[in-house]
Image (tube, rainbow, N blue to C red; front, side, top):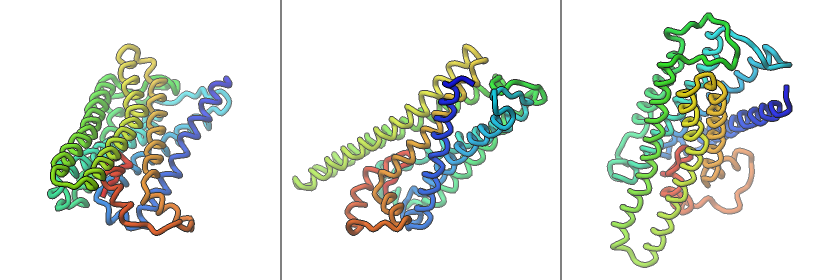
Length: 317
């Protein structure tokens, strides 16, 4: 195997396995602390983390299968049905992660659009609807490529496996969900500025200054979330969908590029989540680290309007 491929696979492996530890850590923090009960969007956040976790674990499984079949040349042949079976968990994970990301974006938007209705809402019930929709669509999408497909054909591991109709379906799904996520987060900024503009009319100079700082923090947080989302999911997905239109044979190569983007997006989500003070405090207490000072409510409330706008890392209570 060429040196470049060895380095690439090592990089791919590290990028895949690293988020798994971060996801396990954050899920443990959410479950052990009061964050899961006290935060309005924590159940949505758990759903997104589960989707990302499934992506990373499925990618590791694909690595293991390819290397075990032919560890020296990494040039294995499978039946098409076996390839589709290995891809299924990854497809389901990507769908679940994207749907839950959309749910988080809409949740953050609604929290600023109509605060009274938002805080009167049954968030657990709403989260269960999103979980059900994400799970059902994820499983259905993972099964789709098996339909009307010649699953008994022996193919090389890099040969295309998706039928034409499914590639079109995936393109439509990617475009619709990605566009909805981008619009929802941009509306977070719009509603934040609108809300602050209205409340700022009756505030004194000190309150007005705090409002401006809060608005800037929300905008900064949303921009970080969108940067991670567009760079690691939006662009790789767009490149894949455009490529297969012109050359189907390149689908597997660019599909790997899209999968790498999805695991990097998972890593970005972990980093964004760890930027939240409450998550960091929970992680430190989990490892028995002493806090330098009391965990003040003011610091948490300051985050609410900011860090909670995040996609996955979103959290705002």
